[in-house]
Image (cartoon, rainbow, N blue to C red; front, side):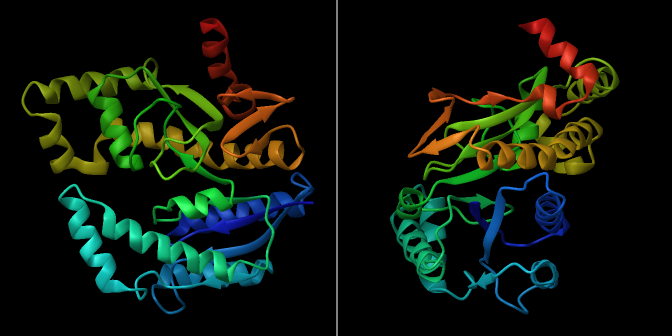
Length: 287
């Protein structure tokens, strides 16, 4: 049995949806070799309504929940560290992360997962926990693509006039969003419905800077929304497919390397398995 630990802040419906989709696929036999050994959350009971809903779901699914509030853990050190980080320094916040990560490892010490899954976990992990466990994360960009939050990624794509993007599952390292990719799925953001949205954006840019547009419209901007919509609908299928490959031994993680059939790979494209049939033709034509 391929066992995983599930790390989530449980801050919204998306966190619950991801957990439920993976659990449902286990129960339906699509992930027959997979087991969620435990869930860890950096929020405590009663801290927020959303995290309480997440805990309730986890209990209903019969999964062991370990919760330990990061907000109440050495708060003064964390605040000083975050202020320091804004000035370009990182020593104190790295100290806080290392100490908090040790609490995770202590509380989850009786479990022996093959890897950990970050599923809406809103803290950055330090080096010690990354050395102890293989950890994967979903990132809303292609390998070598923009780093940052999904909002930052989309604005960078628009700023660069990109013609494609995607979503990937990558190994977690202390350097944010920089770990080796396991799998990825591409999709075009030019052509079809996107052309009119790009035209509208170009008209706006004649009058305002992209920074002004992002500040005024934010996530309501139409091109931004469509890019996000196309990414979101691939995120859950990509996570499920990647866990299937791992649990069946078709992908293996050793240290900070990803293997397929005994060979090191730099990310497996799974467009055919994840994307729409019409999009498969796009990528086939680019080979």
